[in-house]
Image (cartoon, rainbow, N blue to C red; front, side):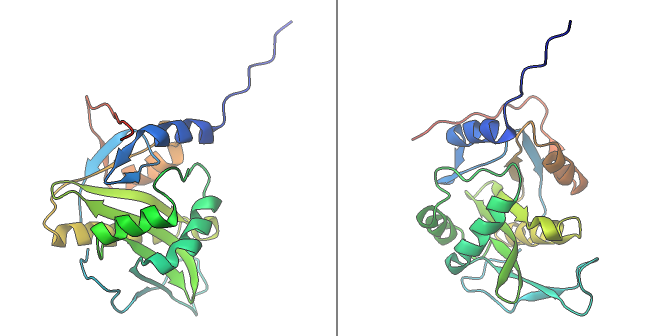
Length: 200
């Protein structure tokens, strides 16, 4: 008689374990498996006029705007992050940590909005040499409509304007859907690289 298979650990546990050990730019990364490519967008200290774009599949009589992420968007962004499966908010992801991150990287992070509602978020920064994308997330009700890629492209455009020529991310090894998204956007696994980190 065959024995039942042991229950697998929830993906969130692995992601949390990764998040506790991976820190870059005073912000905890949530993903694991280094990827590359770069395409950077704007470095304005204050939010500019929102970018307006029709999203395929969304009510075509309405438009979704994208603009710079400000700390006043934090609560709405947190709700989006909490609704996205596999995304873990660990150390550095509280309001104070995000405020420090935004101050160090003005004009690079983006949000997608419908009126006052936050539909998508992308945190973006750099260390002067390499760009980093963190916590890119779209509300599940608005996924697979090109909104995540739009936010990503705007972040990468900002990195370009800042003179950054390369960006990296970390993707959890059990986040297959996330890995497929990054590959569709042109990112590639870096052969021979191992992600490492330490708490400081």
